[in-house]
Length: 408
Image 1 (cartoon, rainbow, N blue to C red):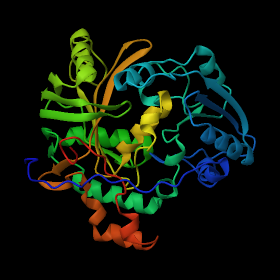
Image 2 (image 1 turned 135 degrees about the vertical axis):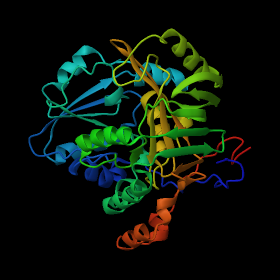
Image 3 (image 1 turned 45 degrees about the vertical axis):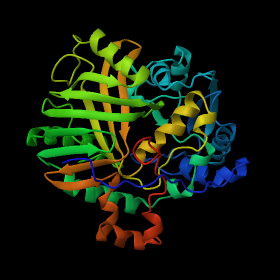
């Protein structure tokens, strides 16, 4: 497979309605507050008398924060709020990842407050799976990461997208991807990866996902079984998922690990430094030592996901959320490098995005030039027909501008 010659879409973004009041946000926020969450679909399922702790920081959109306060109280939730200072001056992508995403920066008293809550909703940047030594039991507190915390991201196109339709898209992707013995990925930025996957590796991945959500795959974010010593090639990217744009970075992958890094500015420097500093550390679930394993590769499936138009104006948590939500868009290949707890309060992990990838499973394409082919499937279109205009529902509204690919 070669990435040359694959046509990619020109940059585009939907027109965004200006939101200037809490009332503009309440219809969507009420939907999120009242419904049950479902893998990559935000929902709080607040019931009367439920104790809800909302943790925000000073960079969050005040209209969004107020809308959730109103909707939670309307639903009968007993709301308490904590506002942290956060990182109001921070904009550099690698610093955002290290300070907020991988480092347990919340003070101990915040975690103590979660113990008495039935639900903790937070907009102060945190990813539960990657929070070092999470000091609260998942059984005792439900924790909801609200990654779409900017006003222009609370859109009906995204948040009320028919669940039946998204489930059908995921199932059609799984029919091609699941148990494939050969995965090949190229993209317009220079990625060329090859991986042979055994039946046993797939069985372990399926067992993990079935335990997590009852399906053999993660809805909205279908995974290739990694890490694997059979992964070889080059990973190229210019997007740090939970940080922002970085200079194009080329990672040479040998035996499933990043063996060399070219370019990348501060991001590339951080990868090289961590690879050397922690090369002898061993972590559970990894084939060998080091924090330089490619630890995940996910295929995202929501055609209405996009970045916030306000990214350049934001800092801290709001800036992270403004960029990160774009990785959920259909056809994006989302990967991570590392995932090692190097000290009690710091976990090394870097997530990156490929926007114009071509992925084939046993020679059959799942994504081509950043377009998820399941969106064109007749069964998917038939399900879309039951909910509205298939052309509108399945149209990918947002395509980012990537320098040297579809933009100068």
